Image (cartoon, rainbow, N blue to C red; front, side):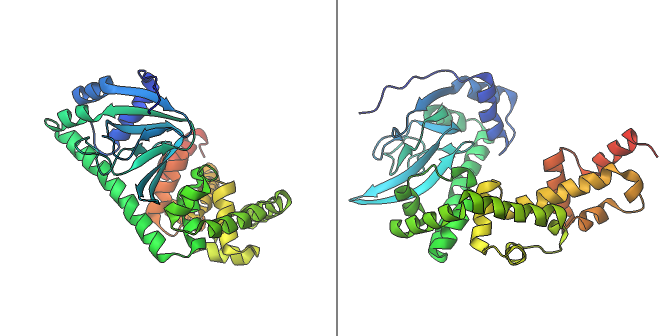
Length: 327
């Protein structure tokens, strides 16, 4: 029997997050935006409660504000975990998204999970008249299938260790939040093998060892400015630090909550920013040359990373520095 849920209207800021999520796929006209806003509702599921059970009709598309869920299908006594979604993700029945037939999967809350929902009847009604919403829903479905395709390739081609490292790299925010049986099933790893891998990573996270290795990483990145090396890779950094590649990858993902590329690029951005703040030292160079000097091998990656971290392009930042620090 399903628990009785408290349905409330979402706060304006929470509703805005959902609308911005939809607009990230395609702009919404003001009238449609207002209509979707009016149809949003918010509810909370306790740990272990089902948002949807296999065989039930799907009634809403959900946006996760807080918490984490798994989607799985049961066939006899076999379970197939097909997706894990957390904060910022949308989730619904892939097999019965519009409530026209029973769902082939269950969606289970792994911890207290707060969601904002949009009724599928409302979605279907709006799809009849809105080209924009058709584009958005198509792209949402594309993202579902792209994620499923990536997982399919990963679980077929990787070793157990590689599968877990891939999971840690792409979803560091999920670490420690999913029971082993679901994670093993999702990664297609024998549960005993996953337990062994997790124990190895627990050893790698021993406080003293963790501190010593983090100190080595900081020394390499700050004092030695290892990020400036052209073509720096995880394996090259592993060799320089004498830390096994898989442990270094896990350490960066778990301790710094970043992928290897994002971790290294954050240091590169800080370096270039500091150079741009000293206009008299670099005025004879092109901005692109500063990016290359900082370790960026691609102009487009340099500009994109800088803008993501600083909030403006390198050129805009340089002009601002010249204004505040005239020669």
